[in-house]
Length: 390
Image (cartoon, rainbow, N blue to C red; front, side, top):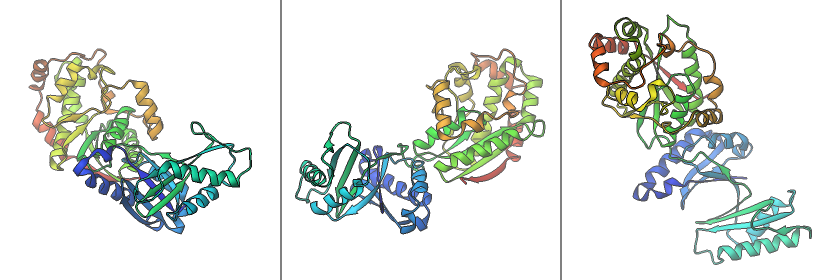
C-alpha cells in the first residue's frame, strides 16, 4: 500500500473558502506525519492524497494511529495505485484479495475522472467478472453485506484500489477557527470540552487555577498530562498556571458563603480574559454542562458570563455526564482526570451554594473585594509553559 486517500465531508461544503480549509488540512497532515514516511501530500479532486515512502509503507500502524487524530478527515484508506485501465484495475483488485479469507465480495467504484471511458457500474461488473474467473467456485457476490468490499477510485490521472475505510474524527482542521483559551480544571469535563472545540477548528491554549503551596501540586501535574494527551490533536499547546489561593482567601473572608462558587468563577473568567487579551485570543472555553452542578444553572451561568466581555464557549452545555465520561474514555483523558488531587475549587466550598444567583447580590459582594488589584496580582504571577504530544 503506497498511497493514502483522505476523504473529508464538511470541508466539501465550504464553497469559495474550501481551498483554505484543504490547505490547512494538508498542513496539519504534514505536521503530524514524519517527513521520512511521506513523499508528498496534496489535494486531488475533493480528496487529500498522501504518497508514502518505502519507510512509510512499513509504518502503516503508526501512520494510521496518527491520522485518526487529525480533525477534518472523515475517513482514509491505504491504497494501491493501478494504471488507469480496466485490465490493470482487475489485476490489482485480485492481487489484494487472493490471500484473504472470504466467501462473499462486492466491487464499488467512484469515477471522478469522467474522461475515463467506462462508467462505474460497468467497472464493477468487469472487475467482479475477472475475480470470479480466478477464485474458487464457492465465492459469490453480495452487494449488501459482503465479507470483503473492493473499493476503486478513478480520479485525475490515478486509479486506486483498496479494501478498507478507516474512520477519522471528522470536523474541521485545527487552526481554521481562531484561538480560544480553555479553563482547564483537571476534572472530566473540561478536557472533553477542549476536544469538541478543537473539532470545530479552534486552536486552544489552556489556563489552570491552583492553590499551591496551600495544596500539593497534584492538580498541576494532572493538567500537564491531560494537555499532553490533547496535544495529539493540535501538535503543541500553551499552559498558563495561575495561583488562586489569595483570591479565595479574600472571597472566603469577606463574602457570603453561598456566593463563593459563583464569585470564584467570575474571578477565573476575568483573569482568563486578561490572558486572552494579551495574546489575541478570541474566546474562552468552559466545561460547563447545564444543571450538572450548583454553579451550572442558567442563572449562575448568566451571572458568570456577565463578568467578562469575551465570549465563553460551552461545548458540553447539552450533554449529560455519561456522554461526557464516554468521550473522555475515548480520547484518553478519563484515567488521568479521575486521579486524586487537591483542586482549588474544592477548597472552602459551602454546604449550600447558591443555585440562582442574582447579579445585584454578586456585585454587592464584590464591592467588599479589591477586584482589580487581586486580578492584576494573579496575572503578574502567571507561569507559562509549552507542552507537546509525546
